Image (cartoon, rainbow, N blue to C red; front, top):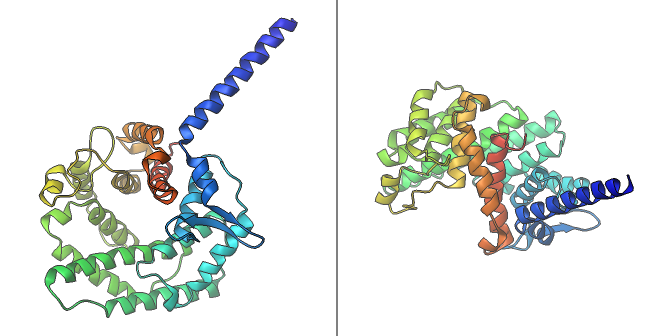
Amino acid sequence: MGRKILLVALTFIFMLFTFACSSTSRDNGLVESLQETYFENDQVAGFLNTFTNQIDITTTYYSFEINQFFGSLIKIDEEKLKLIVLSKILNMTEEKNLSRSLAEEKNTISLAEELKVQFDSDLKNKINNSLEEHLKNELKQTPESDQTTININHQYKLQIHYNYLFINNILNMKISTPVMNLIKDNLIKVEDNLTQIEQKSMKAIYYTYFIKKWLEIPINEKDIIEKLNQLKLADGSYLFLPVDEQKKIEINGSEYGDILSTSLANEVLKDINGINNSKNKEKTLEYIDNYLKKNNKSNYENSTLYINDLYEVVHLAKIMAYNE
């Protein structure tokens, strides 16, 4: 009996050791990256951007999401982390403090949602007023140069408007009529002036889809799916543009999909079809698994680049309910 118990115990220890080794090999330098960029003192906590060596809200949000997804690989003081987030939120109440793209603000609100930060109606109104003022000021900055530059400016504003509506959607704020019309007007200009190649791009599909959805503008879902199918590859990944079009403008002529495009495509498809109706779910899950296995810190120049790329993998994995 004693020998049997010993054998069972040894088998159990071996299984734990094997699991630990498997987890370590799957980690691929992630723990090291998180540890070397995590900052905490007596008052605040956050993650450092290796390019600036400063706490960066985007790096902090990405790192927090990654750490949470993999089961809290390192210990993070969430109460101290909230202080950084609250500071960024207060900055959002004044238009002069906003980033032009509103990407930092989008990530701030996303992290605040993860940390369950509460917003009272007065704070929401101040944030919304500041954001709307920012959008109105952006309208005044349309370049008066060649048509191509003007079109690029409108496309950039499309992304700004997406970030605004994303924040607005989370905080459930009311959009004023002038700002609603401003966004709609820019959307029309973008769609009217996209080249045939640009119309096929993943970003054009993604941003126009969600802006229309949030503004309750009719969407041709069949057309969206057909465009996405042109970007879909056999391994479950997606291209930024169809291969031939990519070669025409000399960007990423590879026939391999990229993680960002794959993430954006599946976010749209999930919104249209729901996760259970996604025909390519199995292939995408396999793609995620393979990406996680080959994703290694040693392939990147520094931890911030590694974290940025891995965040897109984690974001896609959450979209596809990979870990459920």
